Image (cartoon, rainbow, N blue to C red; front, side):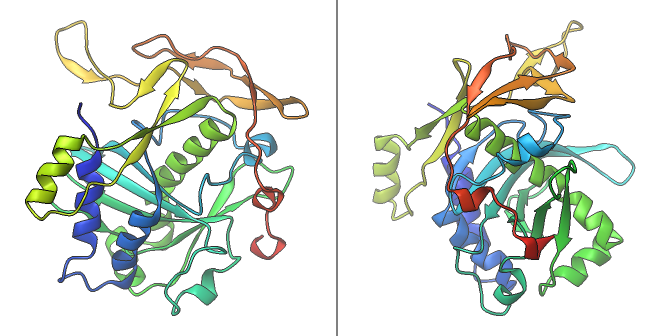
Length: 300
């Protein structure tokens, strides 16, 4: 059985390598070890176009204090040409309950609903790297759709801004990371999906132990409508060429609150994927601590 264990293990190793000096990158390795790990193929686009209204914002609480989401995307160069497949791990955390290096913690506590750090490994490299930036995600006040991003001062932020051209462009670079986290929260907290734990095969673990290699970390995948999302969809097009196929997903969809903990998906259109996809169904929302659903007035 194929799995994503090695990607998580490689990231943990690369981010704390002896030549890594950036403190945000190094602490990301620790966060990755402590996180509840997920693999979500097409993570940033699986619910593409969903409107982040008040009902959906009520679902935006993390399933754990630290969450990591492994997903993939196709990067493009400055001229819009394909630059290869990129693996991404998005770290998301609630820093009110997670220890963070002291030099940055006072600036982050209570400043956002959750925070993200982006890790990536491009097709042209063989190493996981981090922007070294901490991005705060603030949900808009009740009655307003959407969210805003905050960029906090970290040792690497000036270099990242220089490389991207502006603070605004650097924030835009992280929107797909935020989408991956929000899509995971939406699927889990409406009970559209159930999580399945994936542990490395016993023989593989035994071989790594014999070679004095660190153990492979486990992770979760989602099971949606009877389909297990454990690999990207690739299908053959009509002209014989292969291309990426995205599962059926909602475009400009939203969640309607019926009563109590009953919600229903409502969408304008459905983009049909390579397998039978979603239909309008009623889902019960997972219960979360009341404080997790509240937006701190200090962060708005």
